[in-house]
Picture 1 (cartoon, rainbow, N blue to C red):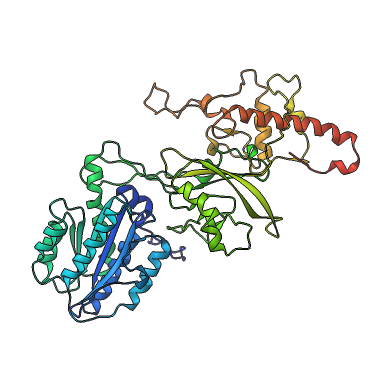
Picture 2 (picture 1 turned 45 degrees about the vertical axis):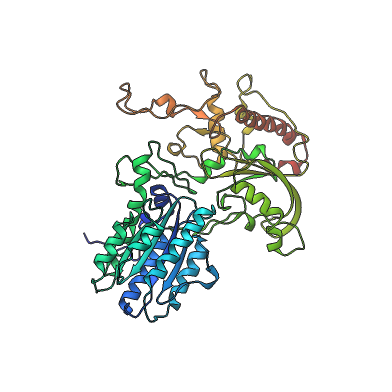
Amino acid sequence: MSWPLEESTKSKDLHDFRMTDWYVGASTSPKDVVIMVETSFSMDNSAMELAKVVVKSLLSTLGDNDFVNVFTFSDVTKELIPCFKDLLVQANELNKREIIHGLDNIQMEQGANFSAALVTGFEILHRYNRTSQGCQCNQALMLISTGPKGDYRHLFKEYNWPHMPVRVFTYLVGKDKSGATELYWIACSNKGYYEYVDKAENVDEKVLNYLRVLSRPMVMYQNDHPIHWTPVYAGGQVRTANLLGVVGTDIPIQQIKKLVPPHKLGVNGYAFIVNNNGQILFHPDLRPLFIDSLKPIYNSVDLTSVELLDSDLNPREINNSLLNDLRNDMINQKEGETELKVKVHYDNMKRVTTRRNKYFYHPIEGTPFSLGLALPDGYGLYEVEAQEEIKLSHVNVTEYFKGKNWRVHPEWVYCEYNYANEHKFSSAEEQVLHFLSRTRRPAWKWMSVRPRSPSRPHEAGQGGTKKMERDSHYCKFIPTASDRDLMQSLVFDAMVTQGLETAGPSSLKEDKQY
């Protein structure tokens, strides 16, 4: 056997998940980060290239809940990106990309004023802390250098001691290790961590060590460790002073969508979820394209990119008024409602029209998400209620579904097994028929609550979940009375249209749509 396998000709995208948002976010808290890069002539070309790799690796560990800026210092300390002057910017993909591009424009200069660099870093972090800006949580100063010359204890005494609100992490880059002692002391005296980087291939491993340090307060002083929510992952909990790892759980978006029954929203109504940065978790107009595989970092789409207001104003002006009010309320997890006139597409995106929608939004407790509902103006004034009771019917209701000329809504979930992954159906119609055929069994009944989780093999000597539980049905993800209404309304529609099919003209013999 050879490794890699000979038939595997495509290169694999091996990804270290410790650099992803779900791992970093679950193992630490949000953070304000200032990165200082020495650009004096004591940094030779190889050292400067290593410094750039370190900056890129640090940026890859930051997410939308973090704030960052990168400074270069020689005789003068200045922002790497001029338009980020005196700012900590949100560490989103756009800003991080701008910083990475700016690394190519670094120029070497005379001198290395470490005092000015440290003062600049501490002052901007303190200002953001005092004025309630930034993340209002962890703060860190990253110093990338060949090592300082001199004693800077007086600066740390003035700006950081004794409480040390800012952790200082130092990275010695290049072959020259003469500055190691001073950088080591700076990091250890300010609750940080020191690393010596001499090879580019070791950078990621060495950068990840700062996460272990930032995780210590959360691990040591919290009994109930927080859950970190991302679009699809959740953080776990550990109980020692060192981070042992992060537990991640995949939550399919389709399962979340089932919590908002689409048949209750109407044909043109829809639900969507927004996170605490205004980005979409799911929305009918969020259509990501994946080629071959899912990329490790997926850039979420902002709410203002999918809700398009009908206005002659410039889109930026629109987003700064009406739509931004909705977005800001959902970010701040407020409850409320509003009304907007929006552009919508139909006929497979070939046509566009306008519609006035009413928006209702509410925070989802225990998460950074807010749920929104968009309903066309005037919707819900009338409702047609007609059902055929399945349990009490004297007729086998499957008789209404004979033939192949009928369909159910492809995106609605009429019924499912408790463990749907163990039962496969070729179509939604087959699944509905399977469920209806089981309703004729003597012991069958509607389920009002979802069955309990599978028992463990050692519990009660059962060796796992009982067969009766595994074979039981329920309607939709969380069974309620409305699921029963959906199925019985479907049976009523089939019963009524069955009579029309035999009595009407030939044009009625086309496929029935329920």
